[in-house]
Length: 413
Image (tube, rainbow, N blue to C red; front, side, top):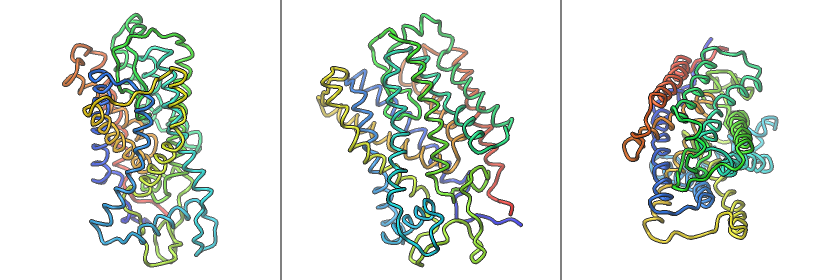
């Protein structure tokens, strides 16, 4: 017997694909704007930009909520009640049927852990780029897709799937080819210093024109390795503990132990303790993930302002406000595109899982590479190695995408 999950968006549904395209484009725009601000406009405040972008995450949920209220028949109370019930069912599944007591402590611990998990890799990157070659740091960081796959297999006791393992390995090798691209050791040692990203998932942002020789390459490489493993772990743990169990990728793969059983009374999956007919079930596409993203933004705003005066006092990053409107608007553009990228990444992480999403995220390397060829001096730095690496990354994602599309949305009982 098979049951079809009509209520949930399909893995390869239009909404997911459109969101994926927007997410990739937002990252490219964010990359180019960040580089423009720090080179052409000369505003080099990497940690402050990091703080601004991550704090701006808070706007995504209110914007989504307002959009739903104004364009659909959903009432604010029904949307909010649906969210509350979904989170309660997810975090407190053992509570008696009909219990609607929201698990505030569990929810706060969850969002605090998510904030730490998405922040500390970027901060480690911030430390590593001043210690090691940026080429080495970038290459090691982008192995997080490989670590995400290893952690997924080990954590959930899965069998190694040759096709997925091959795709992840190819993607990792493709990154190495793009980053190094035929460069020599001397080229890498004299590579330009690259500031930490405003979005940890793919730190390729913001090259400055200041050449800084690596001071402690081994320490920088080790810090980046810890950051890469940590980000791979974050993606897996997000899928396991934060994503709702009604996400379609859970049903399709049966990889995760959160999968709810079928309700014999309704023949549906997931939220059975609605407690009222005036709720939204299932939730609108991406609403739960956007709520988590917004709360991460609020916690970032409240907590991460603390290092700014400390960095200023220690002369690590003397704080300077933007000097003109052009710089201010460009920073606003970085923040907006950063919100789109990170919010889209969180939604896709719940939909597609850490393996496919992390490898798909490597396509940003390809897009940034070609955008540099169009808008920057990337054409001069193009090599056979870099072109081959881009091709391998695209091929690896295509393998995983094919695997995802052929899974369908049927689950055997």
